[in-house]
Amino acid sequence: MYEMPAGCASSSCVTKLATGNGPYGVALDGSGNVYFCYPNLNRVKELNRATPPSLTFATPTRDGTTDATDGPMTAHVSNIGNEPLIFTTPSSGGNPSYPANFPENSLDTNLCTSAAPLAAGANCDVSVNFLPSTAGADTGNIVLTDNNLNVTGATQDIAVDGTGTGSPLVMLSTTSLSFASLEVGVASASQSVTLTNTVAVGHRHRAGNCICRDAALG
Image 1: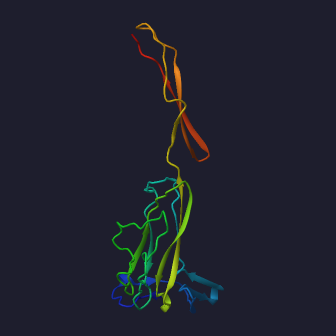
Image 2 (image 1 turned 120 degrees about the horizontal axis):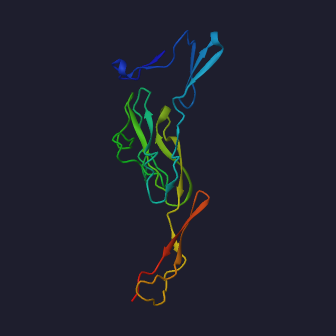
Image 3 (image 1 turned 60 degrees about the vertical axis):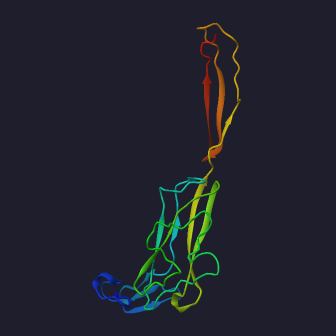
């Protein structure tokens, strides 16, 4: 069984949906997912065509910086129907709408946009970066509003999540050191300044010592 979107004129846009003996029945659920029935195998196969994916930025990222290890991450939207998919123009904000700390990846040249409908058989991208503003877990949903399955105002939610880490915050045990007067060539006793990163990394704190020694004083 093959899928050929409206307007398809070559094998490059034909998708094989099933192979083998059958299927003998095809069903479509309310979300647009396709199911095939194989009586000889006592099996029903689901072809997930509509359930949105989730996007996880796995690398903990310092607040105020973009996760360049995992991102940007992209979900592809395909119009497998025979009519244009229209992305509703919102009264405010954008469509798709992106949650806080998960900005749109503006470098993607094939972004879904309410400025133009998605033609039958065409595809566009929902592309996102992770830019945490605070330490801790970040979650949200990218919401795409359109006329999917001829339902005005239909929405699809793409879950996104990531983890922000705090920016280093240095604390010194003292801000000044005092050394007694010494003859030239005589070294003083060492004095220590403890430098502490007060932001937890994982479940630890990092600290280090600066050992300061007086040079020859006259």
